[in-house]
Image (cartoon, rainbow, N blue to C red; front, side, top):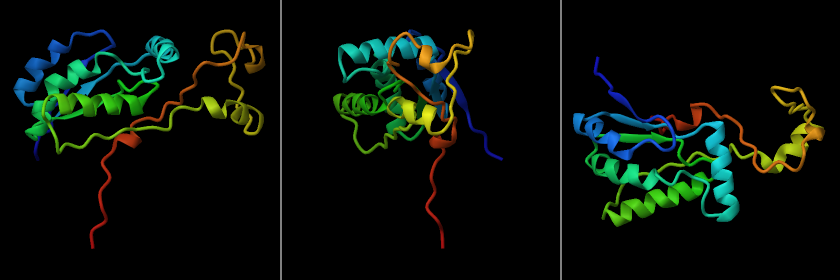
Length: 167
């Protein structure tokens, strides 16, 4: 049985990117960068309101600049939720980081589908989702204003590798 080495290189948005250096030098198979919490999502929404190309963690390129040489060597794969509320923009930042390093030929995958802001009314009225406040029990209709963002937790399933059927 072969071993798979998984490392947690980030615990929250704001950790220092240099923390991954020793992990990468050890030759981990997967480097996980955990960047999100509910507060972080709110911060990222404010960033996106100021500039629609934002909404992902600003330190993502710094982490990738350290990790991509190990990715291109085939030693490490990176998994992160740093895409926040704009994973497509985060993917563009990843591509630009790779280009700036002169790296090509790597795969960058993006998981989308957690943004349910445009479906809130339908989910509430047509599908019976209550959307009550967790602490107070206040109804959806009692929100002080329109929702600024709404994200659903998708779990790990979208990050699984897809394998082509064999004959």
